[in-house]
Each structure stands twice: as C-alpha cells, then as structure tokens.
Figure 1 (cartoon, rainbow, N blue to C red):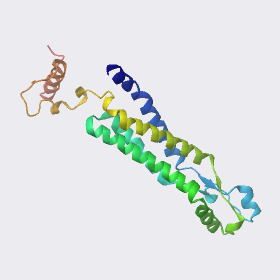
Figure 2 (figure 1 turned 180 degrees about the vertical axis):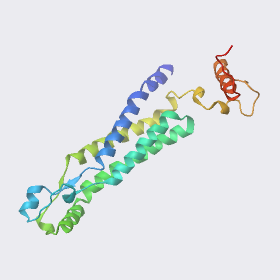
Figure 3 (figure 1 turned 30 degrees about the vertical axis):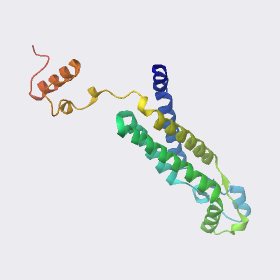
Figure 4 (figure 1 turned 60 degrees about the vertical axis):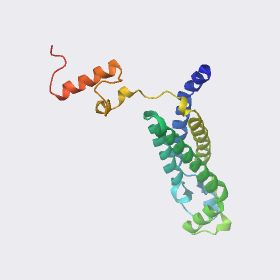
Length: 206
C-alpha cells in the first residue's frame, strides 16, 4: 500500500506539467486559423484576400476553455481537499469542451465554415473549399493531452502531496481553540513572530 501511494505521489509532477502544457498550447491554438481557404484556390475563384484572417476561421471558444483549464490547474496546485478535487474535475470538463469544439468545428461543421467564408468573400460556395491548418491538429493533440492529464488528476489527486498549513494565513491558525493547542511548535513560533510584528515589536531586537 505504501509503495502504491509513493508511486501515485511520483505522478504529481508529470501529470501537472502535461496538464499545463496541453491547456497552454490549446489556448494559443484556439486563437489561430483552424480552417482556411488556400490562397491558390481563392485566386483561382477570382477572389482577393490580403490577410489570412479574411480567409480563415478561428475557434475562440476552444481558447477560452483552455484558459479555464489553465486556471483550474493553478487552483489545484495551491489548494487541498475537496476544493482541489473540484479543480481537477473542472480541468477535466474544460479539456473535454476543448476537444468537442475542435472536433465539431473542424470535422463535423467544416462545410458550414466553408459556406460562411464564401459568403464573407463574395464567392460561389461550390468553387471553394477549406483546409484544416496545422493549428487545428495542434489544438486537437493538446486537447487530448489535457483530457488525459485531467482524468489522471481526478483519479490520483487524493494521494498527491499538498501544501502544508504553514502557508495559510497565521490568523487562521487556532481559531476557535486555545492559542497553540494542537499546533506544531514551528508553526506556533511563526504565529508568535507575526503577532510580534503586528504589535510593532522588532523580532531582531533583543
């Protein structure tokens, strides 16, 4: 049992890094051109589009969900207990949302994107077609990575190391109980130091 717990603790760093990397790159990819009409095709159809933005479609919802996932990973790093597990679940839901947006927008509704672009550029929809850009594949891969990492986090987070209570606000220690009751001596010493500073005493002055 102890060995299994140690193995679970060792997954903390790799899983968090994967989650952050997957969510971060998905946030970048979500604001890039996912579907685009090739410039050669556009020229052959008689259209002129000086910029990629005018002949492409982005998926900003995927980028927004990726930012939510990033925030959830940040919360997971600094919280404990049920809040931490809730952050892992939120990261999982956000990653699933990124994947859904990319798959639906890039593979299911790509014909609708073609029609919208053709209308925007004043072209015959039958004369043009869209291509999936490299950013779409980046977003798809990153969404999968973020989803797997968040799923692992939901399962493993109870066994992961947590920030110690020494990082909590000193005033939160000992609330509703006698001063120093049940506290670690080092934590009590830190609390005394804070109280001394609050009262205007210099702890270095002997």
